Amino acid sequence: GESVGLHLPTLSVQEGDNSIINCAYSNSASDYFIWYKQESGKGPQFIIDIRSNMDKRQGQRVTVLLNKTVKHLSLQIAATQPGDSAVYFCAENQAGTALIFGKGTTLSVSS
Amino acid sequence: DTAVSQTPKYLVTQMGNDKSIKCEQNLGHDTMYWYKQDSKKFLKIMFSYNNKELIINETVPNRFSPKSPDKAHLNLHINSLELGDSAVYFCASQRGQGSGYTFGSGTRLTVV
Image 1 (cartoon, chains in turn brown, yellow):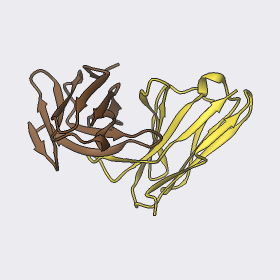
Image 2 (cartoon, chains in turn blue, green):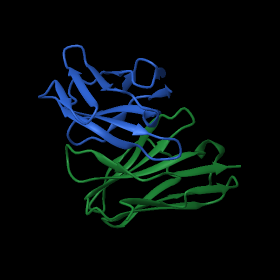
Image 3 (cartoon, chains in turn orange, yellow):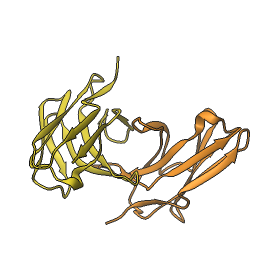
Image 4 (cartoon, helix red, strand yellow):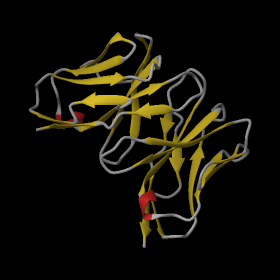
């Protein structure tokens, strides 16, 4: 079946750097995309979402970019902090279906 | 108040036993889900209920039976537990189509 994948299983950055986490999706019919953050022992936490009629959306310190031509999604975290250390998942769906999650990228931030 | 709460948080049981995991959401959402997260952190959809009706049932062994007594609750009953059922199970709820899910904190099931 169709699935969402991530390019890198781990990413290590220094505190204060900008982080970019990438995701490739395969279902061209998907019209809604979300990034989740999962800390150890907790459930996934919503970070930011974007619909297929947009290519960029900004939140507080986070930006999501969507490139529908190459079916690519990215999450940019500005001025990464130790508290950003977690597993990050992209997820996608189309109307009437459940969210499909990618495999996750573990972000490690060292101070 | 916890938006989506699951009980128990940890569950250790022997093979062959029957167990249940409970989930409640106080967000007034119509749709609830069960996901299974394996040891490699991969999250896979199991079931979805909308206003007490089953709408998604992925390829899950029929030993797993969800039950929704009302739209605020979605419980998961598992019969004849097997070692491969060991995982973290997450409940989630959704306000409506095209919106994000709110997840519970998970139930870590260990079958020995």
